[in-house]
Image 1: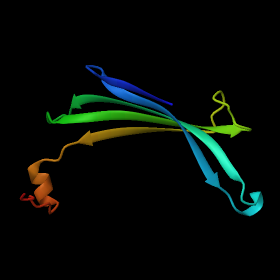
Image 2: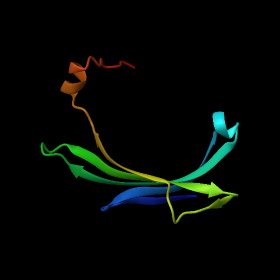
Image 3: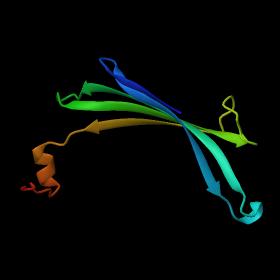
Image 4: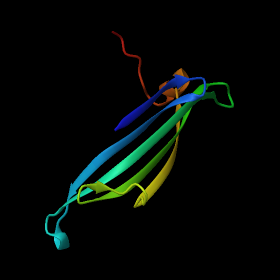
Length: 104
């Protein structure tokens, strides 16, 4: 399941529900675990203190148990919240990092 919020003056975002499968060893004897994760991302354009353009974002990931094929969205098993900041490096920053211009 995927929902995409198109860009507006307020920003843009994504909301996805994905199925996660993993095999186990040890005590569970190779049982396949099935979980679900809801990933919500929201971005907005803004300016840094120096006036450069930046994109700031917030990502929330919640995981859920799936028992007998039924997803329980009322009780998440874990939740993480991350802040994202995307900036474009200046030419001076690229040169100091040793990046050379590609000639094409």
